Every structure is written in structure tokens, then in C-alpha cells.
Amino acid sequence: MAGAQNPFPGAGRSYRHPHTGLPWSRAFTVYVPRGLRRTTRAPLLLALHGCNQTAADFAASTRFNQLADRHQFIVVYPEQSMVNNATRCWNWAQPQNQQRNSGEPASLAGIVQRVIADRTRWRVDPDRVYAVGLSAGGAMAMTLGATYPDIFAAVGSHSAPPYRSASSSSQALSAMQGRRLTPPPPSAPHAMVLPPTVVFQGSHDATVWPANAQKIADQWLAHYEQGRSGRARISTPKASRTAMARPWTKTSRRGYSVRRWSAGRDRMLEVWVVEGLGHAWSGGAVDVAFSDRRGPRATTEMWRFLSRHALD
Image (spheres, rainbow, N blue to C red):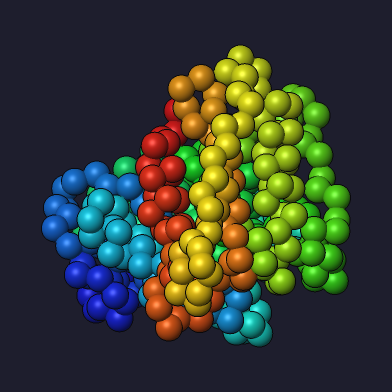
């Protein structure tokens, strides 16, 4: 690893690992929260930026580092390069990036495994590893959950289409508009149960249309039922809603609806739809691109959901 530096916000320390130049390798930064003892086993969050963002932009927008300082977890920020995508998007729509041991999912899983293996600066609890992302990063987080459920205990998607909703760059736009059929789960015995998932989506998102939130939920539920085999049955969703502040102003808080599904006592799926939110991180920092401070804090709510889960 490169020497310690602190290019990202937060009171802890950041360690930058550069791009090696090897196929599919990516630069990444590890954020270690202030006060975390080197011998303490800590959860790990893989945070995937969206298109036209850098890892530092995503850290500033979401403020995951500040939350990590409070709750003592490690954050890893991979960086997509303009060599691999001109707008820094994760290439979630390409078939080679939708499989285990292939392309970008293999690269990102390798980053996680590399961080877990480094015990000189920190200790990672391998049973509490999570992935979240915005837009293309959210789609890649869904892909990681589907292809590496033995690594990721739970995942979070913000403003993203479902897993494998497109199989080419030309299909990506129609998938983002919710116009493509989501592939059904494979038949048993190859069926897989997707990891617990939390979804955030804006009701006024013109880039990734709101219909995608329901599509992700439908896909998750179909996979769960197909591969349930001895697991608890999923409950009917419990819904709640908060009204947008009135009178509406440019600074009023956004309303939202949330639905939650459980299996036994375990909360397995949450879908948040934020009223009036465009293509931006809900409850994010002020004056940062792709960030909207007025909605519920996706950073806090996602971590609350993710941290409830560990690998069996």
C-alpha cells in the first residue's frame, strides 16, 4: 500500500493504492476511521461512485467517512478510470462484467480480498462486508451481491437498474428507463438467493427512471422464492410514508415512502422512494454534484440496514 495520506473528508486516515496497469485492475483508497484499533475486527463497506464522479466526489457527497468515524467501520473506494470508461461509469451492462471471476466484479472482489488480507494496518471482519453504489455504481453493487454472495453480506443500490437488466451498452439506456424485462432467476439447483438489499430511488429521476426500484424488488423477491429451500418465507411488505413539508420551498424536506420485507425476524429488503428527488444521493452534502441534502439520509439508512446483516 502507498503511504498514509488524507485526501478524503473525515477525521481518520486514508491509504491510496494506485492502479497497477494490469487488465481490470483499479486504483482504490481505504479509509480507516479515527479511533479504530488495529486489532479490532471491523466491518468493511465497498463504496462505488457513479458516472462522472471520482471516488473522492462520492466520499464528499455521501459522507460515509464521517459515519465510519462514528460507527467504526472501514470504507474502501475503488476508482473507475477514464481509460476503461470515458465517463468513469462502471461497465455494468457488459456480459463479462455480470459474472463471477470475470471483468470488473472480479477486480472489485479482488480489492476486497486484498484489503481483508492486509492485517498490518487493520483487521476486517470477513463476515461483515457490504457494497453500496450510486447509479452505475449501484448497478455494480447489485452485480457483486449476485455474483459474490459469499463475500458480501448485504448490498445497497441508489438510483440504479436491476442486475443483468441490459447485456450491451446499447441496451443500457432502455434498461435505465425501466423498459427492459429483468431476467428471471435460474432454475434449481442453480438458483441463488440474493443477499439482503436496500434500495433508494428518486421519484423525479430522469436518468434512472423510478420504475427501476420496483423492478429491483421484483427481481430480488423472485430470486429469494426460487432459491428459498428451507429459508423462512418472506412477509408481505410493511409500508410507511412521510409527507413532503408544506408549504413547499427550495429548502423544505422531501417526503418519502419505504417498504420493508422480512424473513422471520430478519429484515431482508427495503425500498425507499424519495419524493421530488432527481438523480442524486438522498440527504447528501451541500454543493456537491449528484447530491441532494433535502431527502432522508441514504447514508445513515443504508448503514442501519446493512449493519444488521452478517454472512451465515
